[in-house]
Image (cartoon, rainbow, N blue to C red; front, side, top):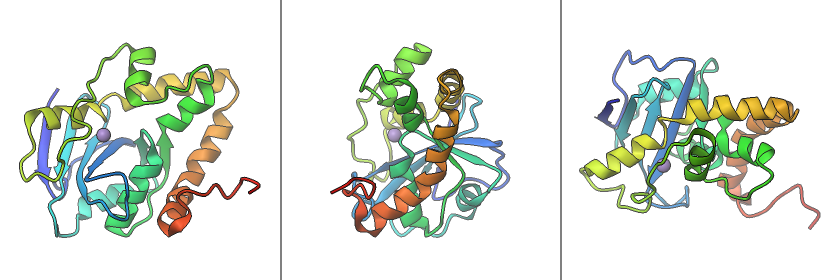
Length: 204
Ligand code: MN
């Protein structure tokens, strides 16, 4: 298990397979205000590729190629936020996507705990630490603890997706999940366009 680190883009010719787990770390939770600092990738092979995005970084053609590739599923936990910040930063649309949080909400109706830490503990008996979640991701050099935390957010998403898919099929909700995943890029677009707090499907 190795954590590879890079600045501003993935290296040329890195093959991450048909389903790429992706997570981001930012200066905060407002994609319009807060800078994108780190993007983590994993193909599900136990290795993480961690890209630090410096202020005023040049374009990242290798990252954008993956985000735009219609034959690569971008696998996130809470895709809504990651899609919005990646779309805002790179000015591109991101699809197709899968979100383990949406999948969890559709099948784990017996709980309201849908955080990654809870999901990994219950479904895969994996313990991850969330201690570095609110640390300074804009620092010019990341700490070892930050890198390990960043990696743990992408390393297990493939296994988690497999488990959630079994449950989605068991409960006959796979089609609903797929339709929600297909809508997610537009949900992120609404967030960036000023409808972040409004549910346009609600009556009021
Ligand atoms: Mn994260």
